[in-house]
Length: 86
Image 1 (cartoon, rainbow, N blue to C red):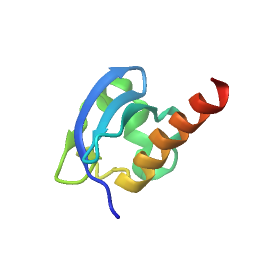
Image 2 (cartoon, rainbow, N blue to C red):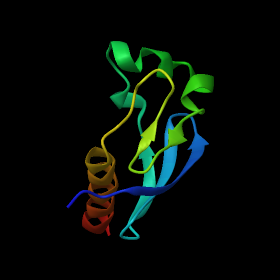
Image 3 (cartoon, one colour):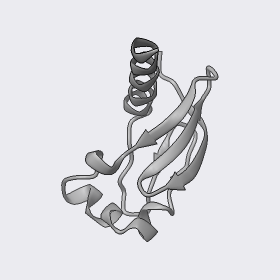
């Protein structure tokens, strides 16, 4: 099932807090994910901060976006790591 980003809010540096349509939420750090030509403009933190949200995910005017499934996996992996540590 494809998840949708319901809410996205800039936190700091390359971190964005996301809330998905099933209630799953967390902060993703995208610093290591912004490589390649399409993501090059996002290396400028001021540009990175200016993302937008469409019906499914977050995107930037340069055409860069992240699949909602990918963002969801980052959040769920983060939650699994917290459970393992706890």
